[in-house]
Image (tube, rainbow, N blue to C red; front, side, top):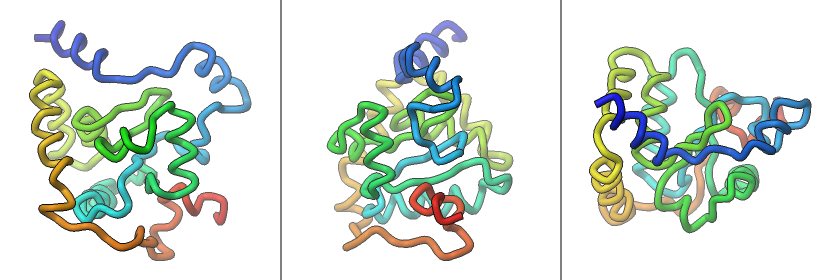
Length: 172
């Protein structure tokens, strides 16, 4: 089981190449995470995705996560730096942590580690093969607008939450 866990997780993770890591360890980082260690990029027009971000904001009591809307200039720039097209990003949300980029179900499970109890236990579901996890994730993701709806424009967080969004990091 442990071998499967690490094998599947390694396949499911996009690692930044060594030259990126060398530059990131120096003073100038190739990824502009706006001084944040963990960034969740999500579809700002999706009602389900916005609901998930509300859930994360509520349960991330230690404020470990920072958020970004894929449609924002900052979100698009980060996607470009990660080598992820907008079309691809719209199919699976993105979580960047410690030089690694996680997508879809893996992103959700890695995020769960940073929430208050009992949600970190969900991390154990990484032992489930990605083709099963991503199959379920993909079914919901491809139907999310039909099932949950779509907003006309990305919403703007209130003043209290702006510090948690990369779109407003330069204002702080």
